[in-house]
Image (cartoon, rainbow, N blue to C red):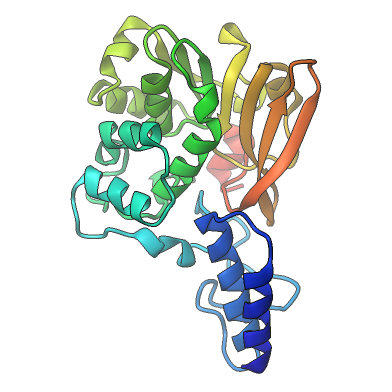
Length: 299
């Protein structure tokens, strides 16, 4: 345990941003390091190597940070109120913006998850077709990262829009004078997203056309409404697709998970001179950004 204590002290001294996701990531690494020699780590049900984290299934469907149970620190299981879920995320410092809290309170997550599930748990959920809806804390993280690019009148693109939750949030943030576009390559999910949105607070914008959802290959973006101030990608690409970079407006920002088994959430900014800057926000675990056929086969 002395090794574990030394690592804990090392982590405390690190100059990392006070981001609960990052801190939980570090805490998980310390815990597994200290217990590797005598037990398996329960997060992935296998012994954890000091240098390589192993997964029971390389396509484990989380849409979440890779350390799922650690990230359920703000679960509100059993509390069937959307507002309580948001308040819990605020309490743990995941939501620090009034605009993000307002939009997540307004768009009821229960409308976008499968019937019979626990909509307000801070965990991802399968939505069929080998796809997931991300955990609330990941939605909050992405909304924070894109907040400045989701101002009234701006254009937002949601790739892998699934059941439509984040697309609806984008629509409310950019308003009817803006444009929110969802792209999903599973036609059945597009139909479901449209039904869900029409029951939500974003229904008016769906009717007036400022919010739309389309069947398409998200790797190609959606050129019709480009360029975009904000692009969110809800699946992990092996590398950042060039069409998405091309459709990003100067001053625009894209948030995209990149990688295969090991993935990072990348923040891609197009500068005013047209150059591209890329930085890593945190480690994550999403389903692959791939073809419809590959997804339906189970990748």
